[in-house]
Image 1: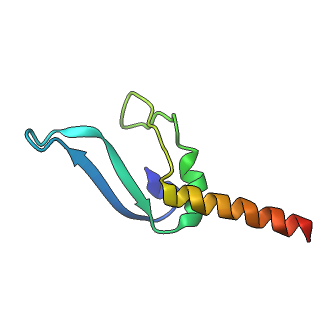
Image 2 (image 1 turned 120 degrees about the vertical axis):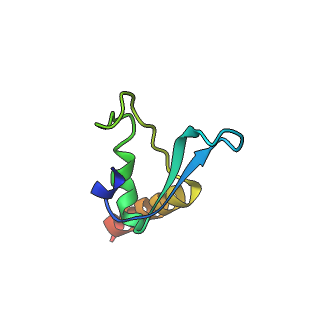
Length: 79
């Protein structure tokens, strides 16, 4: 699913330690931070493999990266 936006580096699917049942969420790590803004567009999208929307949130690392990108864009506009 996220592979449409870029190369996926790692996926961690959390499971209940007693039953082994999937808890319903996962962490997806992208290989390239530049693909993060596009991945965030998947928030509240209902994928074809399930009936309810997924929630996509950036980690603190991605939030910092995106903030730096915005700051750099503002600097470029000033020049």
